[in-house]
Length: 103
Image (tube, rainbow, N blue to C red; front, side, top):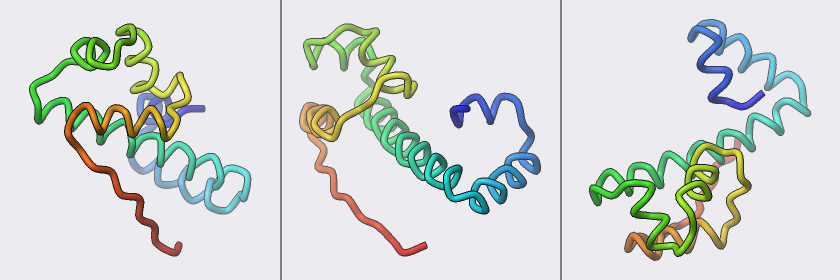
């Protein structure tokens, strides 16, 4: 189940319980880490678009791709590669740095 599906069908306390269950199960923990990174990347791009007063259609035109492609990237139904993320950052005059922390 995707994160956006969880937020539509569960309250915050239920999500907290689900989060604890995910952490307890290694396989689910892996999925949670993946979905969190996807969400972080897509939210970052949406913030960039808002800051530039650009739409997804505008981004698609700049990328030379279809609006459907951009929608799929940003809703998580299409795998966003690091190359695609870098291309979007470059087009929006952004620099991306990766950081991590021990959990």
